[in-house]
Image 1 (cartoon, rainbow, N blue to C red):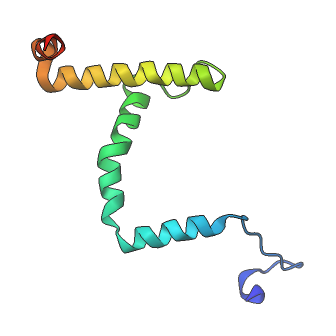
Image 2 (cartoon, rainbow, N blue to C red):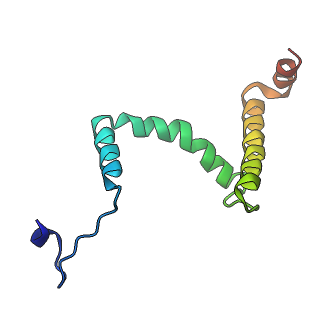
Image 3 (cartoon, rainbow, N blue to C red):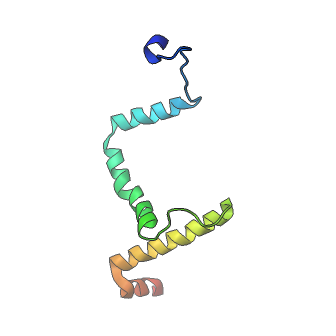
Length: 98
């Protein structure tokens, strides 16, 4: 198999030590390609919106604790914007008072 994989003089094949994880993930995705469509529509939309609309392409703080705090505030702002878009400010006020 090595002769088919490489053309170099030393014929070395490099492989990540945990590459079987990626292979298992690819197999699961091949079995159910609809999962990627669902993920794109539910998971990636908030992160794209945060990155583009809210200008949060990179974290401003350094250190895991500070980055967690920064992301928590960003997620809170995103969620408030979504709620206001979906039910409006009067609906949000009614929900908070209930």
